[in-house]
Amino acid sequence: MIHVFTLFAVQADASEPFVRYIRGEWHALARLQRDLIATDLLEQKTDAGHTLLCRSTRLFVALDFWTTHPAYLRASRSAECQALLLQRRIWANSAFEFGAFEHPRLQELYDSVAQDAISR
Image (cartoon, rainbow, N blue to C red):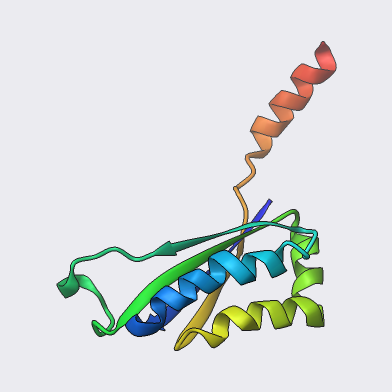
């Protein structure tokens, strides 16, 4: 599974419509992407004095869960998916995609599990 992290800076007065859009219409459209498993949206929670942005801006992180890295690359290059991702960015003052991440693989762990399975 691939995890794609995108940071959004949204004006405070647009933050509620942004969240409603992501949780409603955008989720419905995203379901049409067969390799997109789910999307989660997180909002930064800090004291007013502990943010790098002005008080009129809210930070959100979208976590998109894709089946595989090749599936994510294929989808992200399609016009349909690009239009879908652009819809989220329209609501934000700025957006930055950190990239695609996956859990690290420990080869010796997988070798051990495979060896156990073979010896049974």
